[in-house]
Image (cartoon, rainbow, N blue to C red):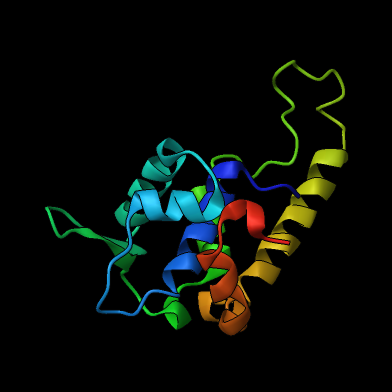
Length: 147
């Protein structure tokens, strides 16, 4: 099961924001720099995370972004379900598949996807950043310096 880049960046953004003290703010350019990716990607991702209530966005000269919830209260499986547009493992309509009416592959892949998502729902954001002391130095280095 491969996540879209949108979901990948969404999860990475949430992970990074756990490193920011609650009274401080980060920014889209900062998150993009940390991951060595385009700010345009992160503008869209962070906009969606804000809309979904995971990120708080504060406008203005001293504005920025931070987690809107405690890391313990952010369920990774739920985030994936909300960020992924297409959770179907295969598309049987484009092009139209001649065996779709009796094919069991789509059903088997749907079960596998559900098992994946169910597993991810067992993790909170806090669970996946429990090794924050190891992560923070990597986030603070230049993207090309990371091993």
